[in-house]
Image (cartoon, rainbow, N blue to C red; front, side, top):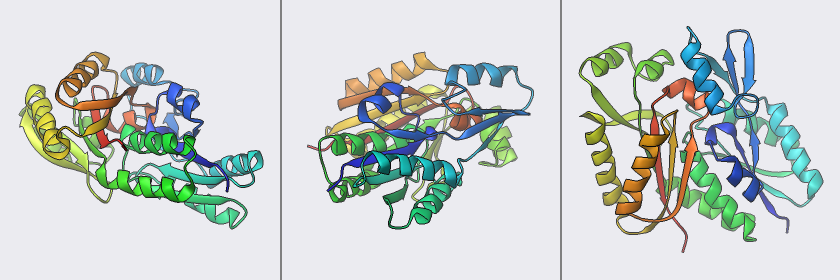
Length: 286
């Protein structure tokens, strides 16, 4: 029985310290500013990205990894341990072709390497929270079957809400209609967004102003998690102070056993824009 290794992609926005601690393999997506191409989190950090975004007249574009990139990583892990079981967890297939690239790579390998590819139906640390929980279990020596059981629990339990500072980026990237974006801006509407069961962005609720949005999110988490011990992840797009304040509120109201603060990287940042805050919560395993 081999060890379980977890592969993910850069849109999981997992802090580098956790990537190293848990021995994760992270395959980067790409960001394109005109003729310039950068690897998400490798050749372009979140800080550098938001600086470039503010200075750029055009919104950048993004692209997924190739199947070859995934195949290379899967083969590397198999060379290190021929009996390895790989669980590869990725950005929602409704938002990107990343899952498809990973799946093609796994099929190319056939029976040579044990790879299970998972569509997280999530983005940013909403993927990360699943990856980290499963990687911690794998690190404790759990077999593939136990790890996959935990993956499925997490996909049913982990909940994410996010708030964007402006609807401009979601509109320009085709996630919402232009009329909704203009109306939202005029009325100072703060939509609370989430991801549905299929992994698509949808408006959970519309409120006026950030304070009401934060209050409504806390209320919804209370309804869903109560005083169960939880893992909370907050990812932010160039707005650390507001993110820290939100985390303090979470710690005051909930039984937070693991708290992770992270930055929304270049790829997800391209689609949601600066000022975004995303909060992901799941129950921890007892």
